[in-house]
Image (tube, rainbow, N blue to C red; front, side, top):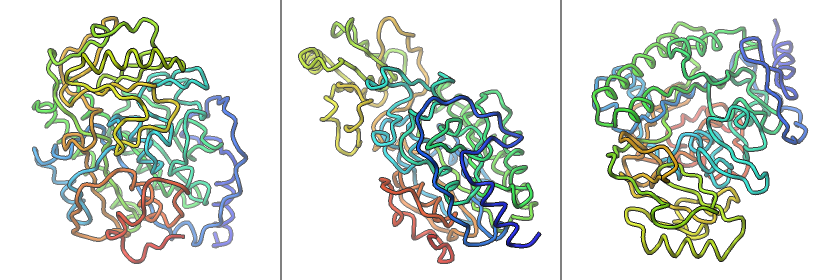
Length: 435
């Protein structure tokens, strides 16, 4: 097939709001209003000459977990590229907000997923990570995630369980995507990624996202210091080896950049470190969405009641702080969204919030606290033809990952993002220009 035919196929495959490919489920209904998609920009080089990026997230992989066990495959990747001392999450250091921050380069206050569970007073509706209908509705997702950025510019994408990829965002989904199933075997996830990378060039995605939750699940249950966590980390290293070895057998092997990240760290919390908010103040008429390490309190604009509860909590709280939304710490970037309650109650690291009518805390691992706490930091490792070798970086904020991915893909990052290209530019090889 000649180059002109390849270009035509790539543009046709990228145009419009795509139907799912054969190994993706049919897109679910989406009632959100979407803007018409502009025609994609033509690729600057034939698809079989462009770079590839595989972004893998190991949920809950604290920055120091890999150092506790032998991780030869992660070490192999880092030796051939870059390793950071940590990846600093956005506030709150939770799964959904931070996976979408990694994708968009925006802080949660700007991209809309302000926690795993939150209320939108305009929609008069609540978003929750476990609500399959809500996570598939594009109206909840602001900003432009990297798969939308790529597809707009003629780059095919694929996702295995990344937050937001089941929804139609700005009228676009990844070319290939999977509906979330927690019980889907991890080796099969990696094998699907390899299958995508081995597709014929006109159908092959250049950006592939993969999500794995094993470490997070084990650390929540057993606590971050448990031997079971070390076993889970070792198992994730085997997955990395399966991925790297599989890529080496593919025709595209020399053009694949692999980036490993995690969304947050983990801290152990004993059962007795529980703060019951309704023991401190009457909350019968307040909408309380408790996310364990922080609670969002909504008053439907009742300023007098907001101040009453704020004053009571300020006087009585220990091991936690109540903030008016507009007075949350500036470095959280957590003031602008209507989806943040009028009051934010934030527990100190190592403490959790509860109400008496909710499920009691039985101890274990948790996350969601202050991003500057080192124990909340995740991992960042990357290697490939677009990345310098043998580089060690200090910890950096995860909002900078989106423009880094865009540079690796040779596309323009989304406009108006919080992340900056220059933060990770020193680890890029000169042969990776912005398109």
